[in-house]
Length: 233
Image (cartoon, rainbow, N blue to C red; front, side, top):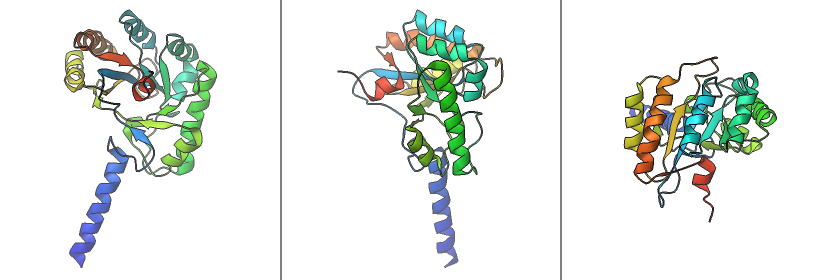
């Protein structure tokens, strides 16, 4: 009997862990982690912005005629509203990445909703666009998130490949993403660091300069997440 109880507890813990961090999990809200594999398109995404370095990133993307998706934090948008607006002006997509970039586990449903709603309001006011996509800070989901996403009309987005650009040098970041690139892949990088002002994202910037030409040479086309998921005929 004890063995059965322990086995059941272990199984429940495993399900919970998968729901919280599994990239393909949908237990705590509608979510995607890749797009269709029937065409050579990928989505480049950036979390934690906008930051003081985002304009430099926008110049790199424009140089290569690449459109991306930026999951922005409300606090950062309130600090740099003109940068958030410029992201949209340059033709990129903006998603919701919470307001203060907290850890979501052990939080109430009300807390989760408030974080998403405050970010939604800040982004809509600054950028003039209401986000339709959401990425949880650290990719951590929690019970109550599904209700918050549903009320705000947000689709969760995870990733196919995580660049680990907060810890690796530029060459390793680029190689990690290039190796993981495949049809429908969603690549995740960061143009900020939580809600910290003036983060050092130079390794990310250099990695982007390296990986875009390489992936384009391999025949990949860059699209926003929404374009990747719902291609135009």
